[in-house]
Image 1 (cartoon, one colour):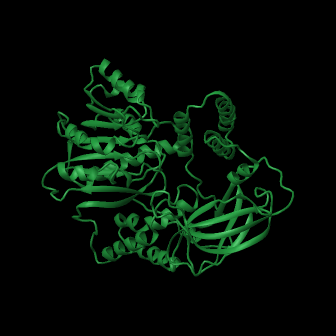
Image 2 (cartoon, rainbow, N blue to C red):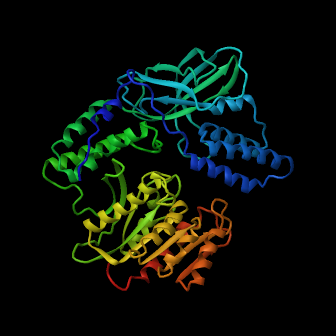
Amino acid sequence: MRLIVRTLAVASLFTFLAVPALPQALPNLGLVRLNYTVRKRVVKPQGELKTLIDANDKELAEATESGRVGDVRRLIAKGQTLLADKSWTGELDFGTSLAIRTDTMFVDTAKPWAVRLEQIYSPQVKLDHSLSARISVMRPPAGQAGAGPEMVRVLGTFEEVPRDLRESPYLADLDVSSLADGMYLLQVEVFDGAKALGAPTLRFVAQKGLTEAVGRIEAGVKSTPETIRAEALYPVEHMHVINRGLMDIGQFEVAKELATAERVLMAAKGGKDPFAGQTGDVKRHYYLKDANEIMPYRIFVPAAYTASRAFPLIVALHGLGGTEDSMFGQAYKVSEQAAQHGYIAVAPLGYRVDGGYGRGDSRRAQLSEKDVMEVLAIVRKQYNIDNTRIYLMGHSLGGGGTWELGAKYANIWAAIAPISGPANLPAVDRLRHTPVLAVHGDADTVVLVDASRSMVAALKKLDGEVKYIEVSGGSHGSVSAPNMGAIFDFFDAHKKPTSN
């Protein structure tokens, strides 16, 4: 493995005033579209509302076809407003157009921070004079139902904000030296006189001494074995990916990740492999050459693992918007079941949160598939894996990925288990000899239950071995954890007749 250290890219993380702002990621467009689709299914618009939605969707289709992504976001927001039985006003149009940009979302509080206010499309509203803005820092909601952001402080009020922020973005240099380390929201409230027009927010991390911490890691990896470099460089590389707008910041814990990287470097300096012999839930990283990026994956190794005997392996694929962490959480309980049944379980990122695991011919889809298969290869190399007992499962987008990769690499899997996944009828013929357990809720408004019903029916016509669990009243997200035990039981009962 040849790991490329992006010294230029890393340096740009901390160049606050000399470079233009980069395009931070807006809310994932796939998720935004999906939420709109689900909302339409729930509301079931009729009469005048249906006429308005149909007209909006016609414009949405045209904007999508022509690649006008800003207008796509505008029309989805308009549709959601109409479905909420509210009027789409000029103020809403303007507010939805606003976005905050910056050269880094990871702020060393010892230095000033430059941000700018922009627009992602030209709103259809008439404004007669320049605007004003109030910039504040808040703490994100703590997680309680109905909780909102907590105000920390107002950083300043700014006048003469341009009406056209596409032509003339508004730049502000912010003093954040008084902020304690942690995750925050930056909010920019825009006013036309006393009238509020919008208040975009940007999640960012404040971290004192960030520049020095990154410098120590960069220096440390120069004398570190190549097998360890990806583990240590991951937080630096991931910050770079986020700053380029390729991924959302999510819940990325910078201080924790940097501390872990420094511990890895310290152990490696002493000639130790910090991951040797580890069991339990472990976060790992590797260099994906085709993407020129360091990718994360999460692996569970049972306490009873020993290299003297072969262990079964499950590859678990997350849904749209999820990460490598999702499948090990309480919504799925994969690691809990793996511990009970004596499995190694691994969850890749799949390149991006919406990678698609090979469904489609985009570079993103191809790299998503590549990431999954590279992680599988790494685990098979690092652990004693029973090649007759390798399984694939996933939920939602990961359920679709299970149908896709289950068929494409049918020679690998002893059985597969798609949960609430979209149909992939062209793949059915290649799955006729692969045991399948499919799970779906009949009240699913995200991926309609007909998707699994059609796949199961097609497999039965081919005399394939298929077990189907349809949960009466089950929603999209409620059917996974309660049926995870049944999935592991199904896997326990199946192995390939010969080793690959």
